[in-house]
Amino acid sequence: MKNLFVRFMKDDSGATAIEYGLIAAGISVAIIAVVNGLGTKLNTSFQSISTQLK
Image 1 (cartoon, rainbow, N blue to C red):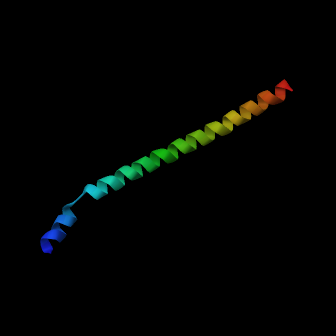
Image 2: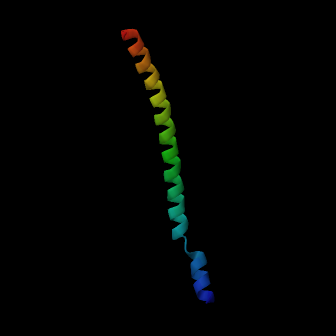
Image 3: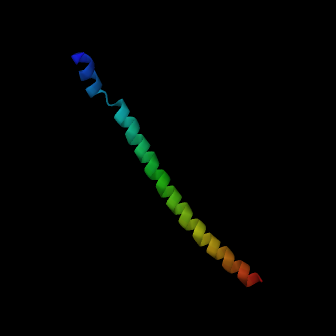
């Protein structure tokens, strides 16, 4: 039983998967923020062009 516990404590494979998950989540949040800001700016530009064409 002690040997099993020692092997469990030395196993880092789960920690690596969690780290990759956190990195992917951070990149996703950054992409969403950029796309949201860009979308708002484009919407304002298109509204301005539409108003000027009328």
